[in-house]
Image (cartoon, rainbow, N blue to C red; front, side):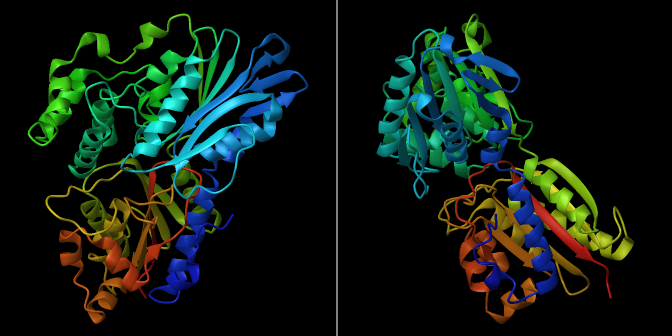
Length: 456
């Protein structure tokens, strides 16, 4: 599948050769992270026997089959399951982001807002929880919960409104916190996250999680948190609000709820699922895009290094670090010799204070890198959100090369000012360097890619 929708625009200027090569690698990386294909490889139906990762279930001895899911990589999993299992599926509730294309034949498809939740998501969450509570002994429940479910399936605890939850979400997304810290708070404000959806499923029903990781290290309760036991606590939520000085910014109802930390409202832990039938499969790991990019780069003849799949920190600064590594390779031939490809993965963040323009962490990464590149060597750098939507924008990320800084000056664009205003989208669109993929159907760790040719 070809994901890059504006390829012709991106390769019409700058270092055209490197841009084409970099985008070819990116396209291959996204194909290697396809959850639809991964589901088809894991789940098989042979007559009355359903095989899931080596487990064989005799459907003549089982009850009904249900699908439950929410997230940016959820639709392809649900679609694959429907094609495999067909009309044996009794019902399903699948919640996706606005703009999701396609239809499901045996499940109810709901659309809602991401990254800030809305009423449509709340209504859909009610349906998901109701379906979970309707399950009975012997039923099979496939849960396809993937990254983005926190916003797409909101269900605040009693005493906290959706508007208050939206404000908290916005504060968490712009304070510089990582996803572990963010979700420690969000799980403790929810009736559905942090294992509560799994707890609503009948303990003698067989709950099977098929998920895609978008979190560094693939921790289950931060990937598919509604349907597995939680490892975080109210204390972890308090630490996040302490660390980022959010107590006076969050609504009073939220501050009181987390400060009190009512033990009866603590999220379900491993011990709470004793005797439950629960299996979990990470069908696409968080590093899949990085590994796919490395595979393609080596196939193309480049010396290749995955620098790290655990990148965190301020996006523009990580971009600057990549530029510095690129120049080190050009000048001193270390840690690799050009021609080469450097790959990174993880989840960098953007801390916003005050008003901001439009952009996202991967767009800021690409511009941060471009500031450190010059005509001294041939380098192209890409920052890409694997789901196709970087921050609250329609773009997946951005590209920069050794001509970008000069082109920006010619167009009257001050990249320093753009980054200080967090308005990366405006600069990248003027430069023709914003990458458009649309929804990719996957959602693994962000991908950072740098391709380097020797100095001539």
